Length: 158
Image (tube, rainbow, N blue to C red):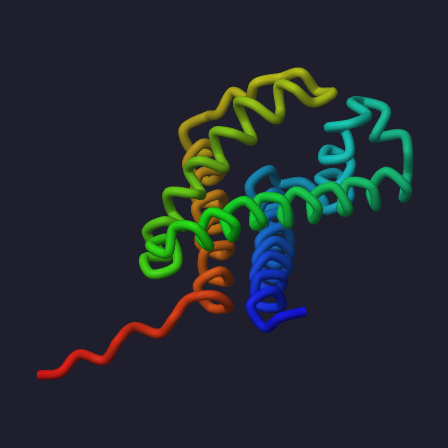
């Protein structure tokens, strides 16, 4: 495996797993729910209400699904960044933009297509909190892409 391939894999895995894990914690805080409830809710994307009667197995399924989604979301960003170097150079700005994209895709495409078949209705406070969580998600993914794949900026001569 080449160094570039290892760096790409590291950007995807670190970005996806760190962002996915922090996102679970954010969901617990935002929704004032336990980790177990959040993980069962994520598993509900496949199982709907049955996820809450599945015990530890469906909580583990929820964790696996969350981390897999995180890695998939990071993969998309990293593959785009390999073709568009500005995503690595201006990683913070593009990470914020990616976070907004993640918010809309997850809430208005993925969730309605899941077993929940629902579109969320947010209060203003919950909308802001969820958007901040997705902005953070996007920045984490873009940070790891920049860190593992970005080139250091050229030194400026005064």
